[in-house]
Amino acid sequence: MHPLYLVTGQPAVGKTTYAQKLAQSKHACLIDIDTISEPIVQAGLSLAGMPVDDRDSQTYKQAFREPVYDAMWQTARQNLPQVPVVMCGPFTRELRQPDWQQQIQQNMQCPVTIYWLYASIATIKMRMQKRGNKRDWDKLAGWEAYQTYFKAMPQCRHIAVNCDT
Image 1 (spheres, one colour):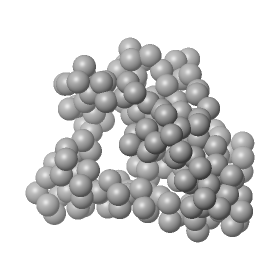
Image 2 (cartoon, helix red, strand yellow; image 1 turned 180 degrees about the vertical axis):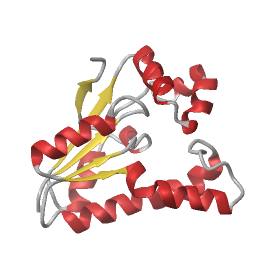
Image 3 (cartoon, helix red, strand yellow; image 1 turned 90 degrees about the horizontal axis):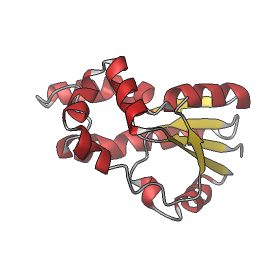
Image 4 (cartoon, one colour; image 1 turned 90 degrees about the vertical axis):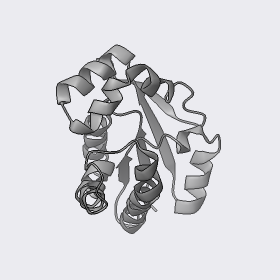
């Protein structure tokens, strides 16, 4: 089985850019959380009468979080026999598990490397404002409370990557 690389970190830290470069250097399949799920999530939210840009409400997390990650894991599992895989997503809850890397290695039966991307709060806020994504409006409106969600991470084995530059 080929290696699995996980690119993690909070929104607007630079995960997609880093994951694209990593996938290119490893000749790997890239599985990005937004690419794999965005059209389906927006359709589901619309049918449920919810804002299509919601990614932070309890309703969204209860209805979509696990299926989105399951789709990513299934896609990785399908590709790993042929090529290395780079998965890109926040994985916020999972990073708090000290044995997460070992769990993935056992479950996926392959070597796993976790990259945790970080940057200064000012850099992340600037990037979020610059990209102008509607999904970020609630985050920016409640910036201080939103940032407290990311202070305790990660607990698992990882490679820290400073994305301030």
